[in-house]
Amino acid sequence: MIFYALGGEGVTWKAEAALCDYVTAEVSISGSPVTLRREIGSQQRPMSIFWGNFEAAERSASGWDLYPYAHRSGKESFSQVLFRALGIPEVRGELSSLVTMHQLLRLIYADQRTAYDRIFRHDDFDKKVVRDAVGALLCGFYDEKIYDAEFRLRNLRAEHGEVTARLQQLYEILGDYSAGTGLFADNTQQKEIERAQLYAEFNRKRSEAVQPGQSSELSRQVAEVEEQLRGINEVVLDLRNKLEALDLEISDSNLFISSLQGKVAALDDAVTTSKVLGDMSFEHCPECRHAVVAPSNPNACYLCKELRPEPSGLSPLLRLQQEMMLQLGESETLQSERKKRRERFAHKLPPAVSKQTALRLARERLALSPAPAAEIAVQELYRQVGYLDREIEELQRRSQLAETLKQLTNRQSELSSEITKLDADMKRRREHQASREADAVRVISGTTAAILGQDLDREKSFHQVSSASFDFSDNSIRINDRANYSASSMVIAKNAFHLALLISSTQKAFFRYPRFALFDNIEDKGMEQERSRNFQRIIVKMSQQAQVEHQIIFTTSMIAPELDVESLVVGDFYTEEKKSLEMPAAQ
Picture 1 (spheres, rainbow, N blue to C red):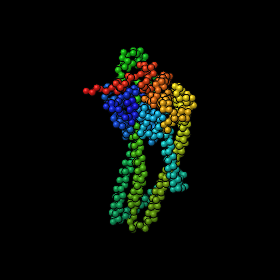
Picture 2: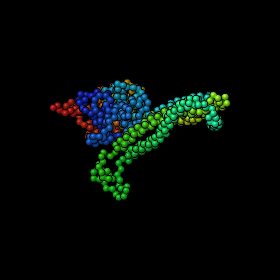
Picture 3: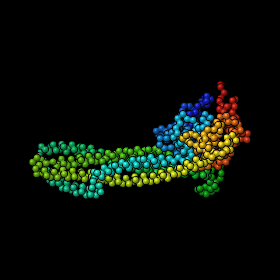
Picture 4: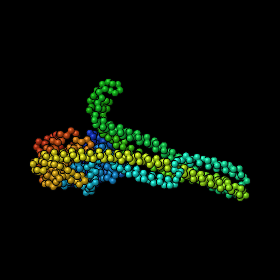
């Protein structure tokens, strides 16, 4: 039930346990009480989380948050929520949905049903890559930023290749004109002046150039073009208005997201500060500086004397942190959608503007159409107007291409610079990751060897351990390069490794192991009583030597006499008549 309450899966319920509706557990996260509840039933049940202790949770009707087993659209899984509260980063990429609380608990819970030579609890859907990721995550040498950088680097290199290919095409199109845009702007302006002069001359001859019969046809053509022009003008105006509105929304949202990110960072600092300082009691009022009298009720605020709705600690901060992260995630999703809409509108604008320009030119040409009688006199002028129109269009096109060339060149330079920086950052992070991995392996292996050295004189190799190696992906442990000992000795070796994981996490701050271990197998495979009791003593001694808060739960039917004390033992000694799960008597 403990395993299940924390998010475990694959539990085969006994008949009595299956009669229960749900299981509730109060846990401590960074020194703050959090209550978890799961209904007992089929696989992948959701979890309800209350950010406070069990007593407050029992009184609360609306303070519970329900999270699904797996991430769904708009709703995080309970593994994601607990990972964040525990300070455990999510594994990126294809494993993101596979590395869950269940997978972490497989390394924390040593049960009786799993083979004695396996370090992970048995799972029907076991994968090497998942085991390897869980091991790296809990031992503190998984760096999620390496994956983020690799993903970013792939995208940057792909974009760099696309930009380079487009540049090569533009160089071929522009040829000698690829030096810049100044020449195009000057030429275009001069050609437009020449065209305006020709247009003025046509206006002067318009009255004698257009005959009555022809005027009607021209008017119809002009009206048709103007109708199309009005339509495209509305499209262009609408696109520009939408782009302007989206630019304002994106700008405002960027400020809001930055504000949220600042608040999240401030909450992280507050959580860290609260961990270090604990609850603060004011000796003097910060407003009037008078001495503050301690409240008579220990659950009251030291300053204002009002009763706290929940026990003090990090629970309110953790809940606020969770809500802030959800709000940040929603804001970033909406911002991404805005940027995609803006990109679609920006993509539609240039073709619409080009069509608008073409219709304007068509309208002007129709306005300048001559009558047959004047055709010979103005034929050369028409040819010049048409030539100038084509020249202006070509210059505008080349000018746009050259501007695009400039933008692409700048982008290519930015991408090259960012790729270089990411490469250097990834190299540094990989070196740091390798160093942490070596440090984690060293301390776990050394602690495992030290534990085995305290075993009873039953396995000579355990008192002369030259190496204690383990492989998460292979799901195995080897002592002195051997993986084959007697069944009881393998149980000792396996439990020594699990205990070493926990103890190592109390010695190395970079470990992400939750500092909780659950042993339900220390008397497995015909373990003799004295050997079991000796291992019990080792557990208690190493726990007492640890300088960091942690918890170890182990079950035994042959407890060492000196350990059967109230400070260590929880619950009764269970028998056939007095079982661990008390069921109500039949009516």
